[in-house]
Length: 240
Length: 314
Image (cartoon, rainbow over all chains, first blue to last red; front, side, top):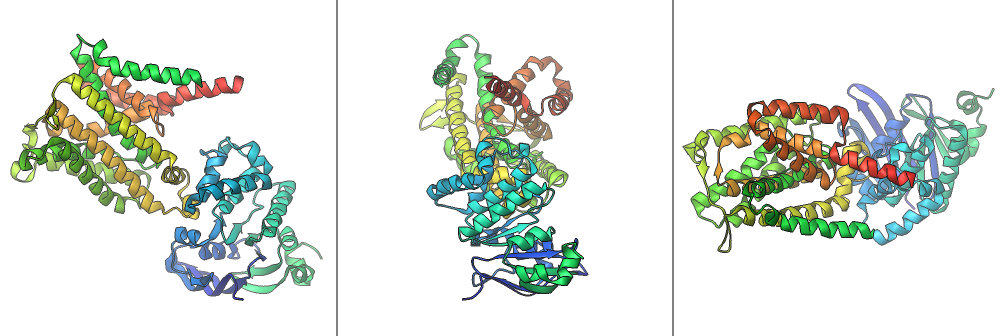
């Protein structure tokens, strides 16, 4: 079976500066895949390029999602094909209520009856969102905002969910809660890719991982193997 | 809940009885007619500014296109007036879309500058029209609205006509902002990057908002033309655009009732300060300053805060 997402020889440059170099990666249906790496390694740019949020003129290579080459598509078209990204820093709509935020996520959907059912599922997944249903998005805590951003993306019924730094700026306990939710979401059959600086929790959560360094993928393996790799341990897990 | 529906019925009865209450006060009915016109005009502006977060400093241009479009179509093509009003509003919608297409890439002050320029272009066009068809600075006279033989020639008749129009336009606005499209507008206003990430075609919706808004304001403009029955460029200068913004901000953005309260309050104030007409712009400027600094939500915002507070207590 062909992978759900296949990226071939992807290059991205900001003007003259090449930040993503010959990246090749794939994601099979039902997998959780992570990109780990240091600050400025090009993880976020890779993710943003896949979902069409970077300037298209700097992109070279092929991005095949669900059998279609999406490399030249604008971001909103890609979303409607079922590839949804939770942006870094969450970007929730701070002056809309939690419910309204979630409904904007269902923007591309036409089956409003199902949306209502799924809204319930999201409230079950994140009970705190149910409690705060009528509250404005901007009044939520960081962790709740991250939950909201994930819930909002889920309501778009994506085939592939991309998450950019889900742990950014959150307390350790909240991070754990978010990643437990990610596993629960995968158990419903969702395919997930996330970028993460917190390599420890990333490798614990995902099935496979790619290590990104200076815009290139330098290692690729199952997370189990990556976690026991000496170099990874030294560079990213802080063990000697 | 029950109290709410009772007060709604009371309000409806009151609105229907206005001409009776002002039986011997024709001037009052006249003003109410104008309030209706402005409610429609700034409800349109609210769609673009309040909901979609795009500033327009040139909405007087759409007001002008509606007024001149309708009056000219009637004068030269002899079409029935209600039809000309609709045609003029549709033309304005198309022009609005055409303007929004390049303007949708602009944000903040660049967008407002573009709309200022647009307002100025339209103003110059009607003030110094090719072949003098608009009567240039002198302006020209036109007829009142003709509803299949029934002439809306008195203030009372116009009041009822305006009441129906206001209800229609507000209902349309209510349905629009509660729909999927309305949510897309709000998402764009709040965070256009995230909106794009949700699959919303930001550019397309900015154009839709602008074009719809042009329809509202242009229709109001055509109502104005056939109410006053005389139009001249003076009414459509940038002063009018500033007045629209003042009304909207004063009443409160992104709501149904904000434009109603804003239009009524500013217009009544305007009439009350007739003796100080030459200081009008000064007064608007001052009001805008006060609103922005002291009551960013407008009258609507203040009332809403009160109600919300009471809800928390109880």
